[in-house]
Image (tube, rainbow, N blue to C red; front, top):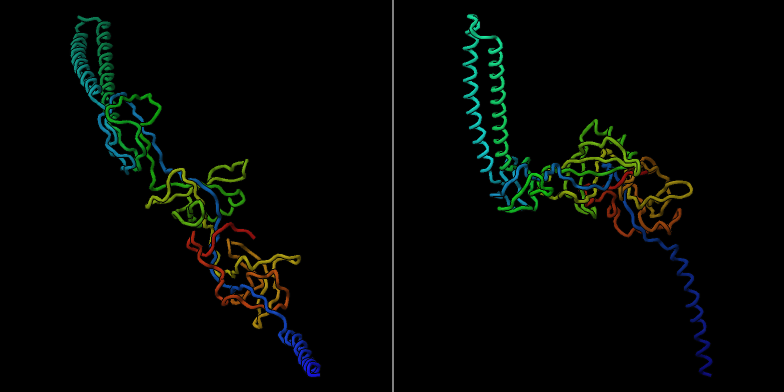
Length: 388
């Protein structure tokens, strides 16, 4: 009897607890969706064209000998920076010095013969009025004088050539640059016909980068080149570090028909030697800077049957889909020309769970995911290839 009473007493309590669960769930209302948000901003947007390029020495010289002889001195160390006119290699000039002395002796001899021939010619000319000498003999003597004058000129040319060979024995730097690995040592015998150079000299300051861009960009590049000098940044192979900043020098005079691209050449001061010949680099060409543009993170942009749109968060933490007009995409930043105003808040992550009127809960303060974080490769908020 006591057991039955206890069970009967417990029944109303159990029913009451079970009935309270739906009441609490109903009171809780719809669940908020966690999303990431960003604030629409207004700022200057630099527009870059990106391409792949290779570093090229501004000047390259394969230093070879122009005379035959023995190397007496090598006046540089491998990797040394030399200036224009510095003496690099000395070749034994004594054989050419001997030839020079021989030519000078021959010149002295021929000059003496020429003086004698001129004196005889003057005597013959003085005898013509008296009729004691034939005109033919006078003409022959005149021809002898001319022949000896020609021989003197030949001797002088041979002397100049011998002096030039002595100059060739002293090999100097044709421009300022960095010496590579040498191929010869003192005591080696070299010849003017040798195919391998004694050393390679490259000019690293300044240095050039040749890169390619699609031909469709050329008209716009040419137009901007008329107004100002275009800035070029050279980045490493991972596009993480900026190696150097230079300027666009010129565009090649033809387009490659197989790839539809054109070659462009940029020049860099390279004072810190960050660029080396034949090094592959990524290139950012600053085409223009669009002033006071309305920008949002690219992650906020969605595309649907009705076109491009974003989810905008209202003050009551609900969202609505807003159609927008995209003018330009630069990496993780998109320029908007219509549909949003600076200060609006848009959703950048979690849009797949949203629909119009959904309740959201931002995962971070509104300014946290602002558009325009500085890009480590360029020092500016944007980098990439423009596109709508």
